[in-house]
Structure formats: C-alpha cells, structure tokens
Length: 420
Ligand SMILES: Cc1cc2nc3c(=O)[nH]c(=O)nc-3n(C[C@H](O)[C@H](O)[C@H](O)COP(=O)(O)OP(=O)(O)OC[C@H]3O[C@@H](n4cnc5c(N)ncnc54)[C@H](O)[C@@H]3O)c2cc1C
Image (cartoon, rainbow, N blue to C red):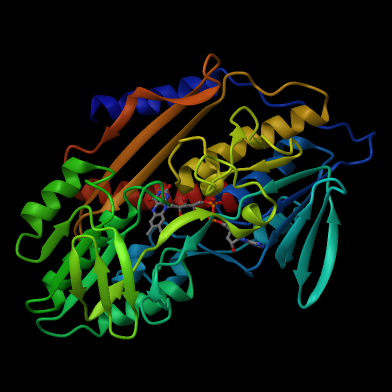
C-alpha cells in the first residue's frame, strides 16, 4: 500500500479514536425538531446520524425525489457498464430502520425569524417549523450563454434522467464521430469527476466506435485532480483519441447545432456534454445564504456547519464554502460533524473543538482499472478553517484492477453509511 494512503487511513482511524459519542437528548424533554432539506450524501447522512446518536430528536428529511440517484459510479452508467438501479438509493431504511420522517417535496423558501421552511408537497404548500434546519441541496448550474438546452446537450452532473440522456447519446455514436465535453471553472462538484468522465468515454470510444474522438474543453488552466493518472491517460492511454484543451472558458453554446464557442476556439460535436459552472443549491441562494466572496457558496463555521448569517441553519455538502472538496465522501463526513454538533447544542454543549473530515474519490481510467485520490482535513483553531493534512493527500501511483475492486467496495460502504 502506498505510504500516503496508509497515512490517510491511519489519520482517519486516529481522529475517530479521539472522538467520543455525543450524549443523547433526554427522553424527558419535548423532542427538538430538525428539518433537513436534500436527501443526498450530506442530507441523508445527517438525518441518519441525528437519529442514531441523538436519542429524543424528531428528524424530517425533505427531498424533491422519491429516491436519490447517486452521481458516484454514474459515469459507468453513461458508458453502459452499470445499470441505473446500481446508483438508485432508497430512503426506506432511513424511514423504517432509523425513524426519519421522509417527505417527498420541494423546499421553496426559508423564514429564519419564524424558523419555518415552506415546502411544496404534491401541489400543496406546508410550513415546517424547525429548531434547527440543515440545508444540503447540492449544486445549481449557471447556464452558459446562447440557446443552451440541457435536454439536447445533457450535463449528466446531477444523476437521474440526465444520466440516461447522455448514455443514449453516447450509445448512438457511429464511426468517425466526435464527443465534446466541457469542464467547469473550479470550484465544482467532484474535482476528478469530469476527467474520470473523459477517460470513461474515451475507453468506450476506443472499444466501440471506430475512429471515434473526444475533445475535452477545460475552463481551468490545468487538470484539477489526480494530474499524474489523468495526465498519463490523456497523453498515453488515449493518445490519438482524446484531445485536452485547457483555458477553454465557454462563451456560448448552441445546443441545437451542437456547437460550442470557447476562449480556445469553436468546436462542433456529434454529442455535446456541457457541464456548466456551478453554485450552491437554489434554496441556499433563495434564503440569502450564498454569501461567500463570489456570491456562489455558503460560508459556515466548520465546527458545526452553522451558517455565518443564521446560526440555526446549517449548510453542508457541495453548497458550503469551507474550501474542502465537493465530494459525496466529504458531504458524508461533514454531516457527521454537523449531527454531533447539533446534538451537543440541544444538550447545551459546545461542538467538538477538533473535527476531522475526509474525502476519497475513485476514478475508472479504463473499463478494468481505476485510480483514487484521498485527503483528510483538520480544524485549525488559529485560522478557524479546515486545513488539509498533507500526509493524507495522495493519488494512486497508477490505475489498477485492484483499484477497480476497491472502488466498488468503497461505493458500497459510502452508500450504506449514508442511506441504510
Ligand atoms: C460523475 C460524478 C462522479 C462522482 N464521483 C464521486 C466519487 O467518486 N466520490 C465522491 O465522494 N463524490 C463523487 N461525486 C460527487 C458527489 O456526487 C457530490 O459531491 C455529492 O453528491 C454532494 O452531496 P450533497 O448532499 O451536497 O448533494 P447531493 O448528493 O446532490 O444531494 C442533494 C439532494 O437535495 C435534493 N434537493 C435539492 N434542492 C432541493 C429542494 N429545494 N427541495 C427538496 N430537495 C432538494 C436533491 O434532489 C438531491 O437529492 C461525483 C459526482 C459526479 C457528478
């Protein structure tokens, strides 16, 4: 095992060893009510652990969908290697095993002074009162200029129908055709994800589409994650198939013509996969909580993920602006810190002063091999920020078939830890 990988695992284990469970909220009190918006990796995990650790707490989890389609592994659905069912995560265990009240509805607005969130449930609006509100709505897209239409040029960056649209478009490619994809300006959901998609699509073209080509238009100046593995894949494994173009800021998209104008030139595609720039989920912006310097993400206290504007509203996962990567593993990790801190707050206690979080991403490089990336973060009391633990930051030396096996084990673990 690579020494940095060992450091990552040892650091995570030691950090967990130094932490004690929060005291459960007493059954003698009226149960406080936590409302969670968004049942993805952040929201599902915080709902589960509030019930698991919290004792006498009522938890309502609200998601617009009946189940959650994970983005994790979704690039393999795009290439047809996995069925959609593999990434469909049910809320049933959260209901039956954990006692979470799960509601299918769209959160529309938040009233922080009344401590209420307004939700559209099947066409009727209801106000849900909360003692603490957790917002974990993931991301929203900043659509590019032009006649952009995500039904014609799918992003497939929120899993579900978009994943199937892109899968079908890829499957329809024939001899000599070109797949063009964009990589958004950082920060965006899943730093290695777009490069992973480029590799998965290139591998598919290599195997199934004679003389098929992929052009990767990156708005950033260089590869944003796993530069060794993706760099090698782009220049060696997919030489002659994949063209990587940095500094390709998107100026305009014509979805009907499948044409894209960028700072690095104009490109025509047979399949055009535009992954737009991103910001916090819409409910966060609607609540006035996208308050970082760019107005895109939410500033929070990393000891408890409380908003710096309204301390009874917690924001975690992709929507927050702590500088930690926007990954499902990280959303799961932050959710545990948040659940712990909320339970302590209900008991009149301060949050754990030394939280640790971690993130792992596994990336298929070919249909039989995968690479990985790990990082842990620790609270720095001086700067009051989460700082990356350098010894934990590593990428795989090379993609391997073992990496592919570990990827499926890791995905099973993170799916179960968040949803079961
Ligand atoms: C192709 C790809 C590959 C990836 N691979 C990895 C990987 O290997 N490892 C990894 O750790 N991460 C990976 N990620 C990143 C990961 O999917 C995200 O970082 C993670 O899902 C973020 O969790 P979240 O809880 O913030 O948001 P999400 O998981 O997106 O959950 C948000 C939920 O909120 C709901 N919602 C939003 N707004 C509302 C509203 N107003 N009312 C009701 N419900 C609402 C949505 O329906 C959704 O279910 C990948 C992402 C992509 C796109």
